[in-house]
Image (cartoon, rainbow, N blue to C red; front, side, top):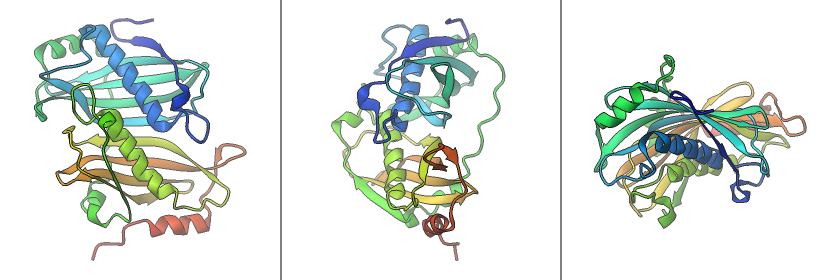
Length: 284
C-alpha cells in the first residue's frame, strides 16, 4: 500500500526481457528498478514528470543487488523509498519481490542536470523529498576502483560498439538503460572468453557510476579487467568511453556456481589462472 514514505506498484516481466538462461536478464531487471523509480516519481510530481526540457534528474550512481533469479510469467511487486536528500542530490531505494521472495534491490543516488552540467535540485523537488525520507541510510561504500580506472588504457578485454538511436531517452540524451547495457556488454566480453569447466556464473551485484548523459553516435569503447578474486567470486571493473572521455564505469561482482544446485562453489585453479590473466600487472 502506497504511503507518504513508501510507493508500491506491480510490474510484469516481458518475454523479450529473457536471456539465454531463460530468466529475466540482469540489465532488464535494472530497467524494472528504473520503471519503479519513475512511477514513484510520477506519483509525487505529476503525470508529465517523465520528461523535461530544463532541469533533468538522472542517476549519478546505482548499486543493484541481484538476490534471486527473476522469472517470466509472474508479476514483480516493487517498493520505492527516498532514503536521503541534499541540495544537489538524493538517494532512492527500490526493492523487487516475486512470488513472495525478495529478488533484488537497488540504491540509487540521483542528481540534477541542466544542459549536461550538474546543478542544484529544483526547490519544489527538495521540498517534496523532505517529507518522504524514511530513516537514516548508511553511507554509500567506496567503489574501490579508482586506482584501476587510472589505468583504463591497459584494460585487457576490449571491444567497440556503435551507439543506436534506441540508446537515446525521451530527452534525447544517452539513456540510463543503455549505459547499464553497455556495462553488461563490457563484462560479457570477458565472460565469454572464460572456460568455466562445466560450472556457471551469476551476477551478484553491479555498482555503476554515471559520468554524464551527453548524446553521441561516436564509436563507444568498452573495456574490462578483473579487479579482485575471492574464494567463489570475482569482480570485473569495466567502462564505456568515447573520444569525449568516460561515460560510465562499473564494478560487477560475479559468483561461480554449481549449475545443478545453483550454489556458490570455490573457483577451480584453472579458472583462477584465467582470471588472473585478466588482471592488470603491477605498475612499474
